[in-house]
Image 1 (cartoon, helix red, strand yellow):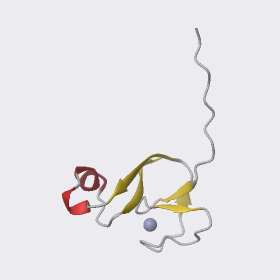
Image 2 (cartoon, protein in one colour; image 1 turned 45 degrees about the vertical axis):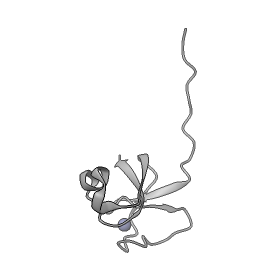
Image 3 (cartoon, protein in one colour; image 1 turned 90 degrees about the vertical axis):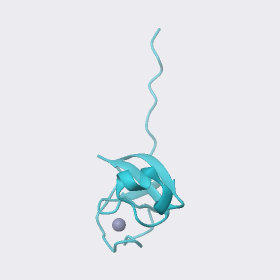
Image 4 (cartoon, rainbow, N blue to C red; image 1 turned 60 degrees about the horizontal axis):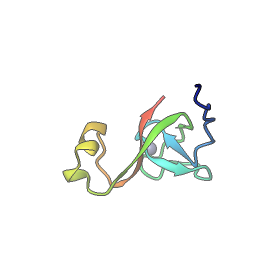
Amino acid sequence: MSRPKIRRQRPPFKACRKCKLLVSHEEEKCPRCGSTDFTEEWDGMVIILDPENSKIAEILGIKEPGRYAIRIR
Ligand SMILES: [Zn+2]
């Protein structure tokens, strides 16, 4: 039995290559770091509410609360 192939849909967000923040496609500049370098090639979304006490935030090097991509390809 073969599993059906799941086509990846266009992600609802794009990720800042610099700080991994996820922003909507309308955004021209990253509100966090001011970068204009975005990618749609990212995996996994994480919402950091409390970076001080978050292991994930520590691993990803995130200092500010927000919505981030876990991996940028
Ligand atoms: Zn950024």
